[in-house]
Length: 72
Image (cartoon, rainbow, N blue to C red; front, side):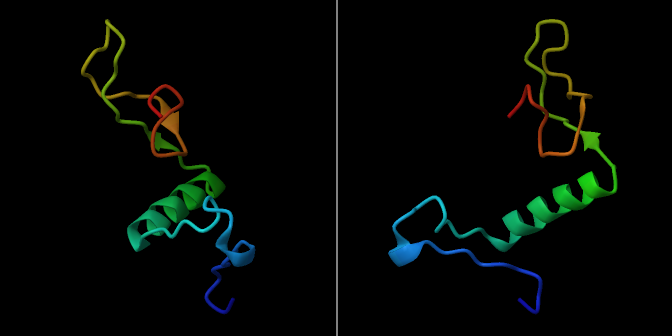
């Protein structure tokens, strides 16, 4: 635990949901989302809108995750 990372493993590797290994890029992305949330710094979703009026334009909804609740 000296580097601040906690590893949680299931007994005998039985729970595949817990045993997933993330790439370094995925870990960095998730940590940056967490830090943005703690600092109260949301970012624009940016995903391509699917509604008729805004179709193709980048979504302007502010979110703390990768995409807003409409584009997950």
